[in-house]
Length: 108
Image 1: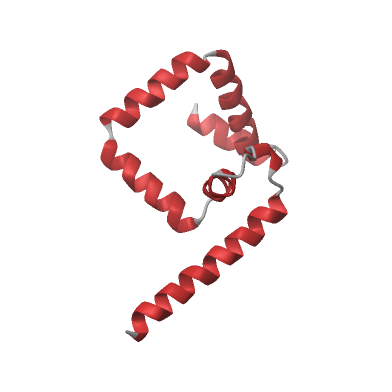
Image 2: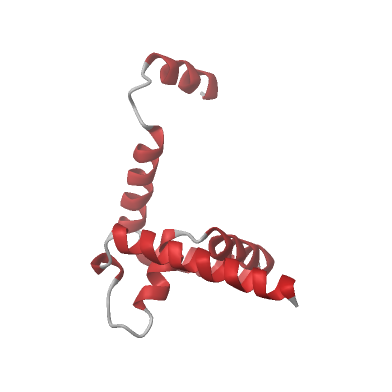
């Protein structure tokens, strides 16, 4: 099966497989949302060290979801209300603040 998909991908480079995969995952989640939520909760409960690593990576890399979460906290905004341009500006602001903090600690 894997070899078949490799060959198919070579013959059809215009197809973005990541988009198809994401759409399928969203659809599967939508159909089985309660079941999926329980499975995610169970996985998070059983793998706290992995959850911690994933969370640290999201914060370190300043993922869009993390920045949206920061912007939504205490503002009453919803994730869908925040435009991508605002996320990029907040990301730049956070980078500057992190750099200032690093320079301040290295100077002491």
